[in-house]
View 1 (cartoon, rainbow over the protein chains, first blue to last red):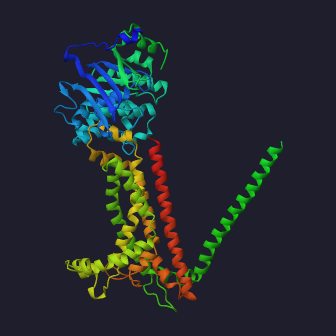
View 2: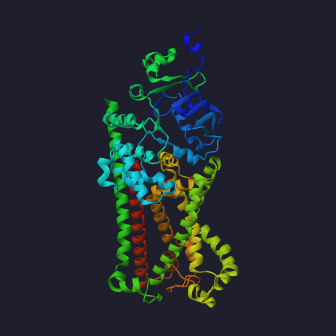
Length: 274
Length: 310
């Protein structure tokens, strides 16, 4: 019997609920009965960066998308277990899906500004979806979020220009600004730098470390150096024998990378597979 | 070495065959367009204002005025387009977003099959089914509107076939074309744009109105122009049901005609100057469809560029 099989249940760092942004309890996602990820139990700590790492097929993105109910769109998708945002179960509790999504924002793998909108319109699009029309409010939100996304100085003079004129890195920061404009509590980032060059990647990483002061970040990354550099906590997922992803270990990033409990975590972080 | 040389020979043999085909095609095209223009030349040189601005068509001696056909073509096509776009856009959006996935492909295939039905079938349906129904039920109702005479025309001139009937049948006929293309255009709007807007708290309706339709906008215009091109060139269906009266007709329940259907009904008896005048109408129709299809191609390529940046 290998050491790996002994540590069945993942280590979970339990925190004071006041410091927790989201709690995941035994979360599983399946598509038409086929389990894609399961056994996810951990707390996402407030004002920290939590990274989800693991090889392809381990269910990182699937798990992330459960956190703002994006699977609702997919016929046959089922999310079980409990995901709690500030005391409310996001699937069963008294919270509409649109409210959830204004509180839990998302940034995607490929920069995806709305191609028919200007930079300004992109940033305030979420506010407009939610019925805010007052120009002074929109202007203020646009400036604040663009500043937070470290984009204000380079776009201040061309806010009415189509967003597609920006470089890839700038487009991704625009998407971050667009999400920040909603003033979310949690920001989900699905491999946000995988389509970017190293310099643009570095800028986004720097941004994340300052952003966590105002928003809790959950990031999926396939890049272990990135996870080590920017995240405070780390969830390691792996594909099981039945091809379903499962949580192997959750702990502080330092522990995961230096002294993990599970040998499979060590093998992965050392680059022995994946 | 032998293998290599035989491969070269067969390639050059092919090469010449293909080149010949190409030259033949070029010759046929030039001959086709050239002879139509040449035949129509007398009309363009001596009676161009009558053809474009004149009202009557007196066989066999002339004058041959094309205004009734031009106006009739525009009237029927534009009303048809309004019908097709209003119903078609709703249908296309429903197919992409609201119909359950399994049913979706069936409906989409059915729509594409309808788009391939030859127009004579639509014309026949218009003549045998819709025309009697319009005449007995819809027309009396339309004629009971206030200002009916000003809008729809003098009831004593109405006997079933009309520009309005032609427009409705054209609308029904181009509807599947419009739905098929706009469904395609709408469904290629990238998922991540839809997900981005949902993640900002947009409702499904907002996603469609504020993100999907604006992103698909240019392609939808392209679909509109392709549908319009099909309507303007339609011959048989209109010939059956428009009434075939060469008179500029602003009252839509009165009989009228269109360029294509007029050519189809008149060419058999035509001689001399009338042949040239019909050829000139043909040139007009050709120019119209060239420009519509150029515009729609341009729109489609712009839509591709827009999505390529995403």
